[in-house]
Length: 125
Image (cartoon, rainbow, N blue to C red; front, side, top):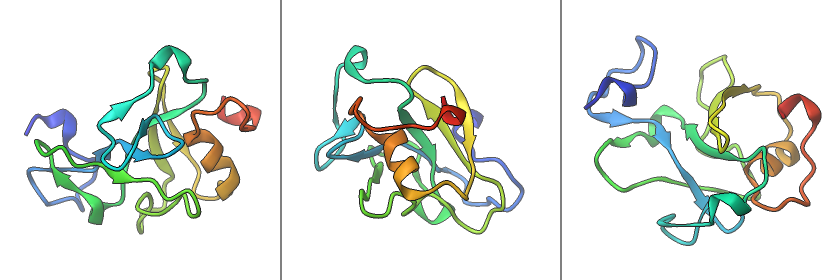
């Protein structure tokens, strides 16, 4: 496995698996039941989360086409484990940022949303 896909931290010992996953669902960048279909990038508003560092128990073999189902009712599902730091994400514009674990569900849901009508606070832009 290329080192770039290896999650950071000495606690991660599951070699050959990665936590860097694309959330998929109805209102996120990768939509549908499998996440294989995506919207035209030019039609997705900023800021929009594209890739996440999922919880360690969601790790998958780095070569498998398996990603993370997005739970609109509980957007933190599968995203945070016992780590104290926040959620590391890759935005559509290429920026990598940390989303604090204290982020409210409605804000996190808006950060994943491909709909421009969702309100995202300025500190997340």
